[in-house]
Amino acid sequence: MPRARDPNREQAFEIYKESVGMIDLVEIASQLNLSPGTIRGWKSKDKWDSKLNGALQKNTERSKRKGAQPGNKNSSGGPPGNKKAEKFGFFSKYLPEETVSIIQEMPTDPLDVLWDQIQIAYAAIIRAQQIMYVRDRDDKTIEKIEEKDGNVIGERWEVQHAWDKQGKFLQAQARAQSELRSLIKQYDELLHKRWDLASDEQKARIAQIKAQTDKLKGTDNEEELSRLDQVLSEIKGVV
Image 1: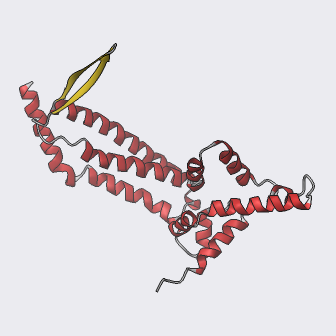
Image 2: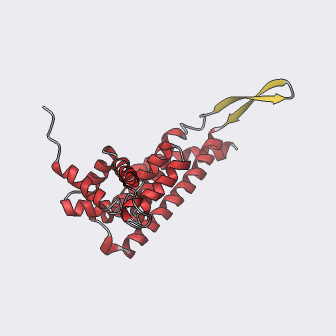
Image 3: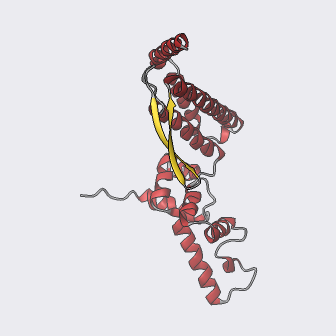
């Protein structure tokens, strides 16, 4: 038997609709005594912005049929100064539907925007450990590359030795980790500037990401770093 729908789910959307989408999701969560993550999940799954834009469009069409006069709040499909519907209407006119959908789902709180960037950067670093992994000093990659000279198509071979791949990986990883540290620093500074406005979830994030990055370069990674140092030493001896 399916679980009954949480009545707070509809109430959350009604609060969002009454504010014409201008209320912060953290505020809705606070009013209903729920986590901001729950509200964000409902907003995404129930397509609040699409429903809201549909309602605003209907109000606009209804007002036109009634002959609303210019300047009347009913003629704009919402209260005066409603820039949200105007903004998404502009986007939907020129941008692909998928892009507009992404924009509608994007967070508006600067801390949430920074947090998303931190997660993406951190995930890319972790994923690179698998993609750019160098097994040992004999880990060599040979790729055939086609070349076109006039109407003649030839081929050449590109060889990447272990030290080539490892060097490029270390450079790329250093740049990515530097960018991640910069994002974390920005988040920390912004968090403390608006500490009284931040949610408990936003405050807890900085400790979480710092612990994760410390773990990445801490004891769990010592064996791997030792192995890499050994490989590089052997390579230098050969070269």
